[in-house]
Length: 333
Image 1 (tube, rainbow, N blue to C red):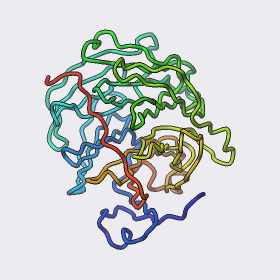
Image 2 (cartoon, rainbow, N blue to C red; image 1 turned 30 degrees about the vertical axis):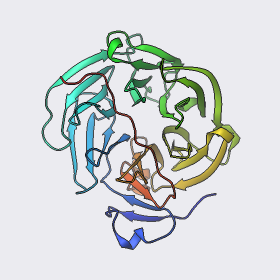
Image 3 (cartoon, rainbow, N blue to C red; image 1 turned 90 degrees about the vertical axis):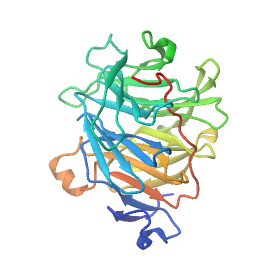
Image 4 (cartoon, rainbow, N blue to C red; image 1 turned 60 degrees about the vertical axis):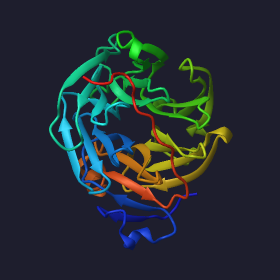
């Protein structure tokens, strides 16, 4: 079930040294940051956005040039999602707010506007994960914060849905949650998958796209069924065959899961302990981009995992993703 992979450090994806192998190969694409998260692909620009969550960094990785650019905001940032109507307008979660900001992924940041406020009942909570659905509605989840011992405040997170019409009254969709993480929709758009990390489960809901509602929670995958695999489920994406690709924080791996059968299909190890999220990208959507963290590592562990905190790419996975959806909340600032 586990695989031995070729790891190509800071190597461009067209390198024949690694790309010619007929099994998965891992590429380290960037230098580490503290807590890389929330990768999202914008096919209009062939650009991947991701964040350095706690430090407030928003990064762009240009697939064509391999250049990395960044801007920084004051607080915790997640997610970062391109807008449907303007490729230079990003929708960003910041602390306890949803922000629209102008950035082309290269130059200086432009105008900014707060669109919505969330999670006011939990003053110490913050944004943690989010995605857009097919209609451009924003689904965004929060988490409580950890104390000095690293213990999370339980039940201090909420999953909200935000639409054009509900900017001043975001809808609570799932509550309470502990650490709101991965979200995904199947190809038929009638199932919604969700991760509350401390449940160690992937939940499946029936999804009504017209109404934008979820119901009938079931368990699509339970980590307790695989005691040999450590770690907490974190961010995830879905491929063209409706298999989930799930990052494991504290686990050092990405899991390929068939949720309709609660089956574990593949385990891919990476050169980092704390894997945070996944996203399909590249011109053919056949590259799995993976983010990682070094935030929880000791100084000694950072020496053991020097690439922790980097953006990685995995190729030759014999599948690909589907285009992700952009947010449709405003047309311009």
